[in-house]
Length: 106
Image 1 (spheres, rainbow, N blue to C red):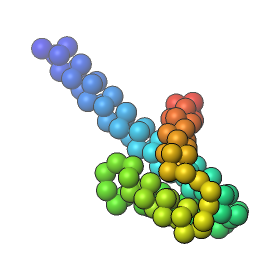
Image 2 (cartoon, rainbow, N blue to C red):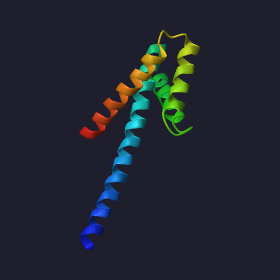
Image 3 (cartoon, helix red, strand yellow):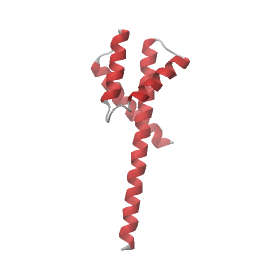
């Protein structure tokens, strides 16, 4: 019975660690996305960092990625940037993969 309990605890620990890593990857994805959009807007330095923080904060509105997408899409349209909805979603996916790789290598 002790072996089963040990495996259960190990599985629970792995589940918690995986959840933490995914949370960190999502936050990093949002930062990378925010910095990319800021660059498209012509922002740099502290202004770009501030915008990236706004994108990160947008992710706390609801579960999933749509809150981040809506924020970024509204900003892109407001600025009149030549970025399609498909391109934005593609960058979101690409930045998530990049963020996961960065976290895995840390």
